[in-house]
Picture (cartoon, rainbow, N blue to C red):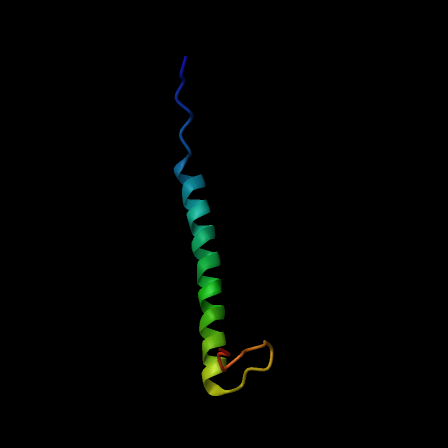
Length: 54
């Protein structure tokens, strides 16, 4: 017989969502920083190929 599962509490749902948003914000900041670095010509901490071979 099918039994409905227990509902996830609001606090747990909000906690998971906040954690996801925190991680997304951190990754967005890294991407913006990397983009600024490439545009300013100060990229030294990563490998960036400027020309496409083909």
